[in-house]
Length: 147
Image (cartoon, rainbow, N blue to C red; front, side):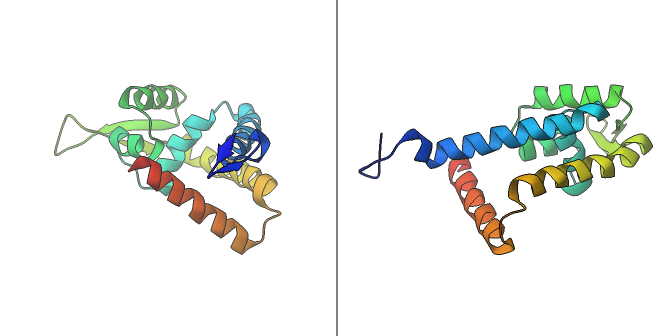
């Protein structure tokens, strides 16, 4: 394969490496969450509400880059587990606000700790400046791809 006019093997291609690291991180995090009965996607919903200030399914679709139907299904599952609740907006009855239930609020720090452990396992060996630079580069790539 050629990249910028130079011969590059698959194992050296940046996109392939990003894909491999993402896959390994996801599998590891899924294993850590399994005892709690929560999937990685469900955790991201909880994190979006807790850390990103997402109040509605529409807010979450922007954060997760999933379609509204997929987010609705994830919220349905979290609601069935008693971790998230929908509250009808007083100003606009068509809108449901999302919040963690008390059980969800109790579980979230435990799940966050598992996320931190996964993060440390995969990136803890990097110097703080290296990790910050990596995050900046990945953010630039993501922004470039999302327009």
